[in-house]
Image (tube, rainbow, N blue to C red):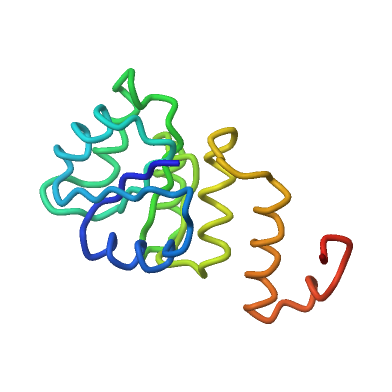
Length: 151
């Protein structure tokens, strides 16, 4: 799966969270205009989009990505430090597929990306499920202590 992320300081944190995920190829852009060009070149499976970026508001870039025939249906996950319901509603109403307050826990983040990648996964869903459950266990969730997927 291919992801595009803007801007670089968020990209570095995202890269750290996604390290060890062999089916995720992360691309960074430091300018919104470059994100449009790169998205057209690589046809990303999922786009990670920061709400605040240099040169252009994330919601404006979201509108441009939705107006572009090559990215109009690409899942876009908005990342923001703002957990305000109004901001979240604007992003979702503007065409975002999901909205995460940055940066979420690793297991939640990867699960969200995989959910939106849908059929683009390069591995069996059961393997993904095991890894997500392992992530929840790592976080100390009592809901995932043992079960039928243990092997």
